[in-house]
Amino acid sequence: MNTSRSTPNTTPEAAWPLGDRAAAFRARHFPDCSDADWHDWRWQLRCRFRTLTDLERILELADDERQALAELGRALPVALTPYYAALLEPKNPDDPLRRTMIPVPAEFSKNPGEELDPLAEEDNSPVPGLVHRYPDRVLFLVAGQCPVYCRYCTRARLVGSGHNSSKRQWQQAIDYVAAHPEVHDVLISGGDPLILADAKLEWLLARLRAIPHLDLIRIGTKAPMALPQRITRALCRLLQRFHPLFMSIHVTHPNELTPEAARACQRLADAGIPLGSQTVLLEGVNDDLETITDLMRGLLRLRVRPYYLLQCDPVWGSAHFRTPVAKGLELLRGLRGRVSGYAIPQFILDLPGGGGKVPLVPDYVTGRDGDDLLITNYQGKPGFRYHDPLD
Ligand SMILES: *Cc1c(COP(=O)(O)O)cnc(C)c1O
Image 1 (cartoon, rainbow, N blue to C red):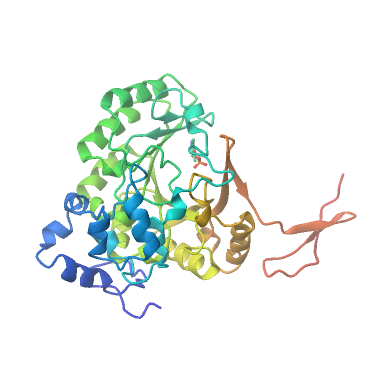
Image 2 (image 1 turned 60 degrees about the horizontal axis):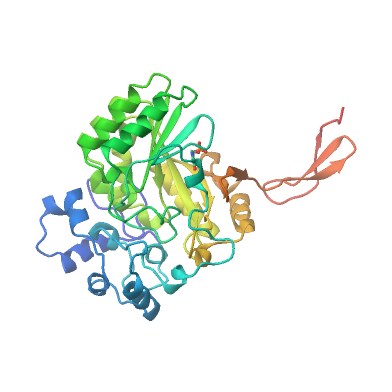
């Protein structure tokens, strides 16, 4: 594993399993690109790989990948920033990040239990772009696009189509929050909110922060992993004016924890933004204990507190990614006692039909003997007793 140490001028010393693949990729595919361009998030967005022809230049495509790319049509688009494309193995279709980004035909089938809108968000949407499911929190969808498109996206029905929310629509959502004093927490998501320019973010954040009953503003984003160039000093200065502001970072695999991602997280953490992670559990991508352990420990090193490990939502065409629920519980059991409690996320099932999120916890209590609970410990050793009288 981690044989090559990270490049200079990066702190903290994140494990970087990919060595200097990014540098090699850049030298090969963008030999004339200046440093200024490469580190510019707008250049990264402009130069994304989006089509079969683009991707043929950088990957040896397998037949099923080629077929899916040719048939993509109006489905969830493909996009890879040059930075993120460098993290994919060019010759291996089973490479974990490659599986999350490059479509295969299985994505076009609708399997039993799968829905276009699995969480029934449309049913809980009082105004366009706002989901109000829990009494105290709202989900505010402010962007229709992302730097990269995850193939298992729960909001595939909404994203990539090109229409960003308008300020008029945002204003309706802001007015709704202002008119509902029970709402204390706004989760800004999308799409990816950090695809928006600083000025637009500032417009949104300033209006939300002016609402007196709003405590927490959260931003859900994959930018620190997929487009770390977006985390500029100017952005961090802007965000820190609107505290308490938290960030939930979508992260999938330890291969994403590069020096660039580490620096992005460092800047955000230094701006006083509490960082949490959200990881979707994916078959053949991150569903083994070694990978999950590396990911969660790696995140803590970047000052990102693992928050949610999510069972893959039953969105159309996601069956090839879905693990049995028992797998998530097995991984949690494996983490407990193996890593710091801070490195252990909650395992979450988001209930179809809009029932909301439910944490699933491995059962350590195996039964009762009179006034004693019978408990199995973190090592799997049974027979511990805890005196817990019934009355
Ligand atoms: C996930 C989600 C939230 C936030 O839930 P937390 O458990 O507080 O992180 C809020 N609203 C909706 C609709 C959600 O899906």
